[in-house]
Structure formats: C-alpha cells, structure tokens
Image (cartoon, rainbow, N blue to C red):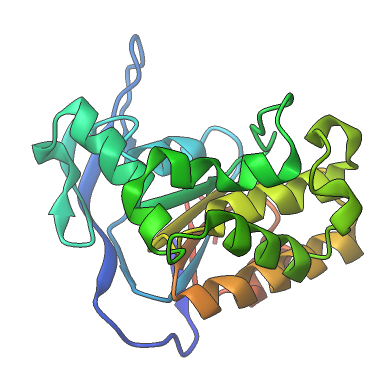
Amino acid sequence: MNKETAQPPSGSLAIETRQLRFRWPKQQAPLMFPDIQLHRGEHLFLRGASGTGKSTLLSLLAGMMLPETGAVNLLETNLSTLKGGARDRFRADHMGAIFQQFNLVPYLSALANVTLPCRLSTRRHQKTRGNPNGAATALLDQLSIPEALWPRPVTEMSIGQQQRVAAARALIGSPEIILADEPTSALDTDNRDRFIELLLTLAHEHRSSVVFVSHDRSLAHHFHHQLSLGDES
C-alpha cells in the first residue's frame, strides 16, 4: 500500500474507512484494505493491478456490498447501520457514479439520462433549485455536448460523448461523493486527460469528493491523494 498527498483543500470528512476486510464466496484469503480519510472536496486516485480489489472497494464505498469486518463512514454515516433500502436512498441522495461501460439508459435521450438522478432523489432535485432540465443543459454545455444531441438517444452518440453524459449524470444535483470506476479506459491519451481535468474542475465547482479507480498510474498527478492496492510501490 502506498499513499501520497499533495495540498488538498480542508473540510469535513466525506469518506472514512477503518480496517475493511471483504471475502468473496469460496475465496480463501480475504481482501484487506488500507484505511481512507477523504475530506469534502478532495480527490483520491485508487490504483492497483487486476485482482487487488479496486472495484470491490468501490462497491463497499457505494454501500452496494457490506464488509466482513470494518466500517465505511460516508458523511459521518456508518453504512453498516443502514438497511438495504436506506443504503439505496443514501446512495441516490449523496453519490454519483461513472462506470467503465457508462450504464446509460439506451432508449433515453442524453437530457433524460442526465436528469434521471433527480427523478430518483428529491434531495438532488431540490439542489437543482427545482430545475433539473436547466441544471442538465448547463452541465451538457460545459461538457461540450452539442445542443442538437441533447434530445437524441445516447446510442446515437460517440463513446466520448456518452462518457461526458455519464459524467453530467453523476454531477447533477451536486452529490457530495463521485465514484468513478475505470471510466477512461476506452479513450485515447488526449481525450482521457481532457476528460479528467474537466471532471475534476466540475467536481471542484460542486465541492464533490472524487474516488477515481484506474490501473493507469500516469493519471495520478491529477489528484490530491493516491492509494495503491496490492504489491505496487
């Protein structure tokens, strides 16, 4: 495990984990994770080789799975104390996610995909000042999605455009935490770096904390903190 820090902003804790351990069924050795403390507005780059538990840790942070031992505290809430429905509500209210495959709804327009979290969360709807469409169009504009594409199905968009729609969906309603799992793996170097810089700029504007998972250590310089899993140094 290796940690590095570079002048992060100060603020209350967004994420705190302690002594996390998780074991998959039929797996002999459990996955052990280093402790994390991430303040509001800070960004963490999480790296590691395949099989070191990057995506598992992200699922634990999202409350989609519970650890065998240890605690995940998000915004001073211990996820293990919440029942399944309450964890789902907490996730909808306080987290945005960007997945490697984007997980956009193919039959919905770009605009409808972006506003979807506001239909699932009253809190995020309210944080758009009751105007999810206005917030969505502002994000799509900032992310350089042509206005002509906003009402069209996302299946008619390029991979890079779909990725930016997924980022807008994660950011709408100013969630306190953004979780990103290998979202740039399909992009070339220029578009990858441009996307990360834009994502972190928008996260800074929303004061969102970002956990960004990748195996590509060349991306680490964009982030306040670095954390490696497994035997990396």
